[in-house]
Image (tube, rainbow, N blue to C red; front, side, top):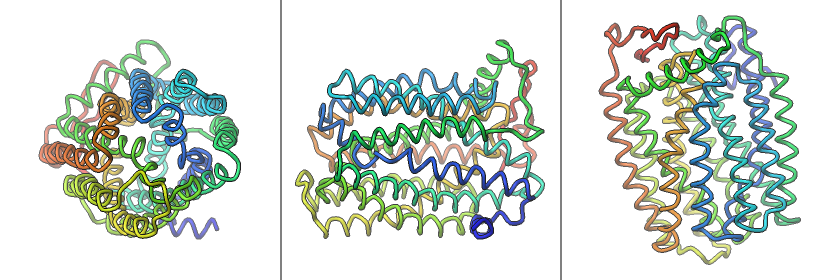
Length: 450
């Protein structure tokens, strides 16, 4: 199995210690995914049944604002002390959040769970990615200077990564149908608490990962260095703006619209989980193909892929949900088949975009600021998404999912514009932007061409 996965992930040409490191992260994150997404088939439905779609928007907005306040400082803290304790704290708090959901019976008790999840997410965001990227560059830099293995690995990893939450979602939906939803929350809490301990044990850096001396002064230098890099480098600034708009519409879709659509066409939690599993399996095949294509693609394709992945997708959802009316909550095989037929090719373009995004971030973000910037990104997304979640809840209630999907697709055009600007400002090899900028003792490497 180990040899098969090495070949499948395309890492057989890496040094032994690099292969072992990749597999350690791969196995741990795949098993984690089983617990992390166990209740995703019915989580939003559970909240909607309890307090309604508009108050779901309020809960999402509150959690987003809180996470936004904590995310970037937590990321910089991870750059300062390493990712072990950040991950331990994050998953332990999320376990407590799911325990509180077991007892939730009102808006106030749901609010407690959302607050705990927000604090946990602020610790988790970017930490695993930072741990992997920084150490990958140490152990594989000479073997993969052009990042071709990294891009291929990212695509294959994403393909398998889609299957795992699909299985978990289906399993969680079936368990919720057989027993009840809160029982699944308890199972999820136990799994997340276990992984808090696992990450405390396995998250270690290779020699060569440099961290600044632990002092308050250096902590604030990391905060300032990450912000300066993100907002004063034009390529990164416009890329982040594009990411804000494209990801905001994704958040509204996933958090508030996706599973109500599934429920309308399947009629049960178990049906939602199975439909999600099949779509993710088909999507994994698409991403598997995308991993081969992406190896020879440049990041300048990102604007075009965003147009397909965001604008055309949501306009397509608007058309499909108009043809097949929602709110029936009955099994509709024609609607399910049509939705799957539409969704599958979108995953191919989504996979290409995600792989190229990963390549962009791997080489353009300075290692010493990687965790802080990886946390700054969701902070910006959360700031923009919080008001949109409230507005989205109102739009869905008053205008319906079809009209809201069309509006989301129209917002995606703005993201295409910013990604296009980012690629236009991408510096050429040897330009004056390909230097290091000194801020006291903190060096922040600016973007270099991929």
